[in-house]
Length: 215
Image (tube, rainbow, N blue to C red; front, side, top):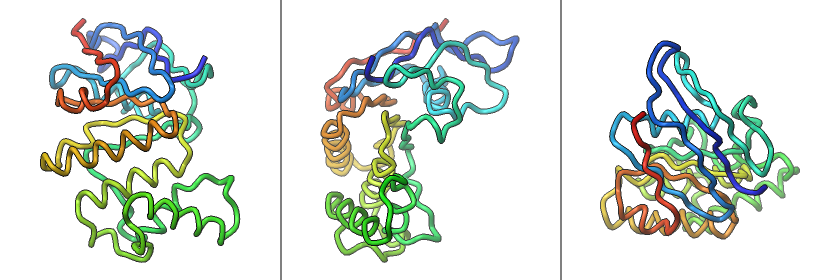
């Protein structure tokens, strides 16, 4: 079975607490973008944390996460091959733009020259050609977001989680970056789960929209 599958997933903030949302069954096909919506505080970002393997202490989850038919529920985050992009495009401030991308580069690409070529190609794809040695602090918001996406994709993820990655951008830049992100993930046939409050995001994604419901 390809794609990202959530089976009867439920999360509660403590053993004695009520679940944040009704049990969720969801399949995100390879190359498809499913948008997850719901009221503030219902647990959308917490669900992303669980799928990615970053569930905070104190929360309890049941159900399974399957990726490409493999059960990854109990695997550590680094073994899941699930990339995540958040609201803030976080780049390592002590590394150049190129070294940020190199940090995410899949280990199968060995050798200094091969890795440099791969990073330069990714920078060109992101419209950041010639930016290898730039300080991330000198980038605009859109440039940081494109660099962060390329760093995530260079790790060769088998699925991608997008947690409100466009919410802090102005409307024109939001539309441009959304198109950039969606085009790249579709080209790689990656299953994508997008958390958003914006119906324009869901419309641009072009996939199913799932509404998290209260228990």
